[in-house]
Image (cartoon, rainbow, N blue to C red):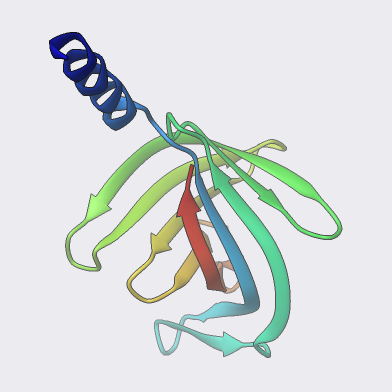
Length: 137
């Protein structure tokens, strides 16, 4: 009996220490461009239906984004938790060398991708995805 309890305890401990991938499915996408005069991302397109999947690996070092047309990998260079928005931020470099900031905001059901720092700041943009569902495994 003691051996069974010990085995069960060790199994539960091992499960609690196991890292899990995070999956985030999306249902809508909207792109907004920076307007220097208002200092806001307020030049936005329509909020179109858009299915895609983000997968953050267990070590949070790679984020993979899959759409109907393409699969892209983003390599995490830094990550942080922002208490102001209760969200996770990831500074990433894409598999073709572009730099972005990802925001995973589960409270507001949103994934945000920021592309900024362009020579012409009107080229800076923010892509907003509406989260359909998210889970870990």
